[in-house]
Image (tube, rainbow, N blue to C red; front, side, top):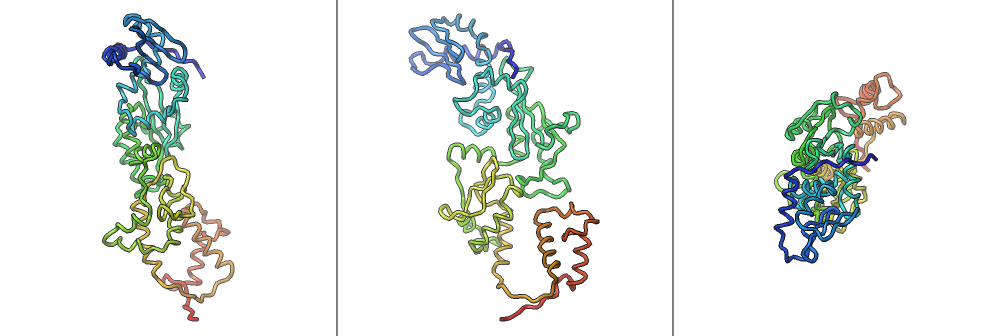
Length: 379
């Protein structure tokens, strides 16, 4: 790790620092500034300036000002978080600090963090690669610049990607998958690549992430503070009305199949935190996503309506003639469709049961007018 070369403090940074130190209530016992290792307090009528690297005592205001350049990274870092980002306690601020690996008092000292920011600190959020760097034009203020690109484009040259700077350009990017199909679920792992948002401010950076993955930053922040308000299946289902009123009739065991179909990592990047009820947990794993899912989404509710209707049908025993290979082929076709890999099966690969020619052959042999030749068998 290269050592960070400190930049001179901007005048705005020095002015804000001195104003904060001077205007804080002189009778207050708390420090004038206490942030990321930078401590300024008054002891016996004189200022004390302290960082993990050392302490200066007995300072007059003029002495304090002259000492600032010796702790410039701490002062510019304080200015960035207090005057550019602000928003103490907000999801936006917590997310920005997470992006540069700063979330507890045990994190790296500011000079080491600045050295990492020179190279860029990279985090992953769903299918987004998020990079935080020091802004070369604003280091005297501790300013950062942010970049967002698809994780699959991590090694792609910047010039080869389509550049964006407006957060709302992401609305078009998230609309369709690589095959041009509408993406009803924004957290589905089908985000297309080939683009980059670069040179973003902290505000535009967070807004872009919110546009790609709505509400994920806020729900992640609530979870960090143990405040995620989870709506479990039964309470979500019972408040449905109109054509969706039937979803609360879905059998308990069928919800296991619903979550296995819709709420696993291969289908959604959220980590499911809801269950059948608070005390009745589902066996299907909720996934490993960075951000939580707090309630059944509209796509799951819509699919559950169809399954609730289908599950109301009585099961029957059917008689149809198939060879063992044909029976196995039906399972291979179901697997291929469920895993969305039919496009990957080559026309010449007739050894795969889901091969198009194999499927057409089976249809010609065993189906009439779109249905298998089968008869229900009454006991």
